[in-house]
Image (cartoon, rainbow, N blue to C red; front, side, top):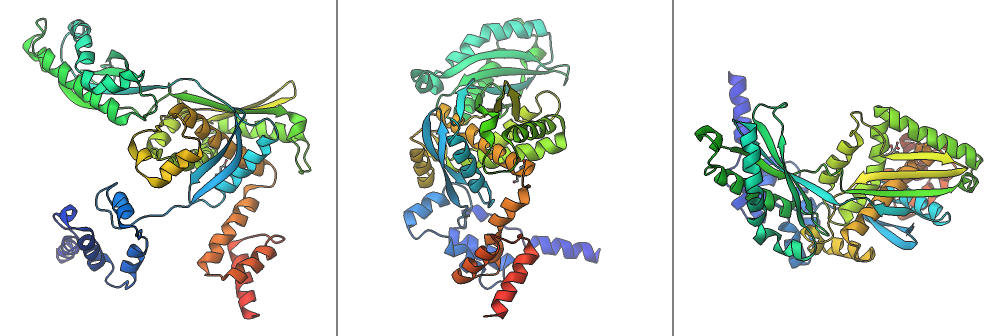
Length: 451
Ligand code: MEV
């Protein structure tokens, strides 16, 4: 009992009412008092990441609630991406040390071999109103048929601008899901949102559908009193977008795959195709294989102000679309031609959201030539394919650690606060020596002992 009181007091001392109403400085003071009374530099760490331009800082403060500081990620660039005969330098925001280097290497490799070819297969997005109806399905179908034009016309104020540009609601279907859950039905709607990711547009339309659907049911003559009481559970877009699909590929003669490696082009191609087949068949490998693809995809998504959680969720669901988690990429050798491709669902925006707010996002989009959402889908798919190519190339030849640890070297040196001179000496040393954490620590200690 005494012990439980102790726990209660511990938690009580860390709860606070009205935190969001405090100003930034008060919030920081509370955090420092509550969690960092023994860390004298905690406040300095938080405040040193503030931007000295107050307006810019305020912009970032207001992206979310309860901002106390900024969280930096490096923004790198991978040049030399030839996509449909156009050159791009791709911006990538990511913390993992080898990703940008790998992307740049893959871009350079394919630059000399015809580059990447891409196409957008489809751009349809989905949203659903989930509801419970206890009654005769035939009557519900009749009600849906009667109300469908009104569902659409009641959203006129929301859809006007989108329609002017050529997008809008494509269709609404009534779906019977009662085999899964008793009384469960959906309004399953499809949308074209053009250059917008479309989450707000779709959700606003759905909430209006739900309102109209519920209120018109109250006056539908064929319904009994109970049938009129349609219970809306929720209205929300789906991040599963299998019909918002893009393809990217590379092709070349197997002999052209030789670089300076000892392995022949054909042997490399065969091993590569084998590695992809393993990821197609073996979920444990597929997850890591696809994680490597997402290294490239997420980095561009973040740099261009898109929602990487939405993309991640949709991509992994797509990877499991046949009932078993599998590779997003595929490869084959046919008539001595090596082909490697990805098909991936990507719901992206190049207008709205952070795209017109975050100065680095604006800059990234400008670097890419202010792409449409369709163009951005193709660039992002290429970043994923390139990343997977680089990973598989290393994995099937030298092994991944050689490149990884070379890039990780700088992180270890920074951990030990190596000076510029020490970094130069040790980088040179590890050009010819295997990098491991202990080897780097030994080398730093040796260097320092001898100086
Ligand atoms: C590491 O972030 C990504 C890899 O594991 C991907 C892969 O194994 O294909 C190298």
